[in-house]
Length: 382
Image 1 (cartoon, rainbow, N blue to C red):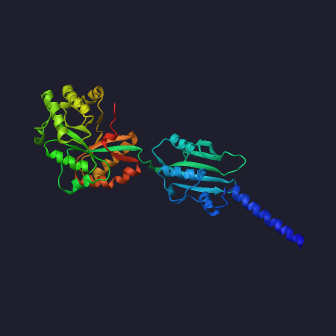
Image 2 (image 1 turned 90 degrees about the vertical axis):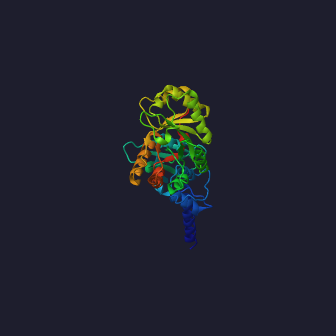
Image 3 (image 1 turned 120 degrees about the vertical axis):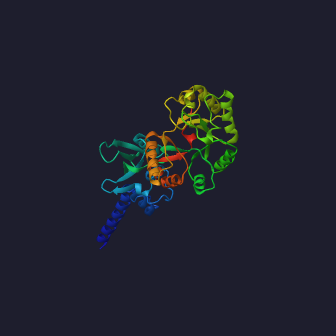
């Protein structure tokens, strides 16, 4: 009886030791908090409201990294393989950043914890972009290796591209489209033609709604001049004082402006003297100049570079007279171009269809990593 009891005690002791050793070595359990540690080591992180993890916890660091990539719980999953005590994570990382930058971030999180990246293998021609093996530094204290398989998701990194939308020839009207434009929750740049002192009141309304303002100068075209702009259009035969005076008067009527932009101007913008006089005022006012239409004989870019004036040309024009569906299609195309180029300046005018299409297209901006910004944020400075 005593001999059998002794064997039973020895057997139970060995089982307990084996269990604790397996839990400690294979699963890396913190025995003071076994349930919580097991949950976060074996199961995927299901929410972003997990309790804080240890600074030396590789799983915690990876969790923080994934959150910084704007990933949610559905973008990664983890599994534990008891055969070789390996944790595998499959991470679907947004597009819009080079693979080298993503891998560099994984190297960075191991710098202040006792882990290192042992292998980094690119998977050319396969579903995965890259596979990383992360190992503990200590050979005596065995910790599970973590294998991260990097794939690319369909969504893009936020803020990986920027698009500015310039609303031309804006006039205040007490109607719904105007109210919706001013209350639009994302950055827009509004161009106001300084025809009279009513422009000051309009500019104040725009400024109160945190929209960027540019002064739109009517410039002589090769075709006819619309009747409403005849008295305010800068002509090539005007004197130096008349041209600079028109620019200065616009700044007086619209004081809170960020820059100037052109309206018409196929003839005026081909005249070096006129362009140089306008840009000299822009430089003095510390603004930028936007060429809203591209003309073959335009001298603006060359003069802006010579004078050191920030300058940008409109690349896309959205026809505000189209239907909501057509405008949405144009916006979608602009998003694609912005994503490829990094930045894009588009122009349009206010209409009920434009506001409706712009509001409905907001998810497209987010999904493609394109951020709406003010024009001043994408104008290159010399």
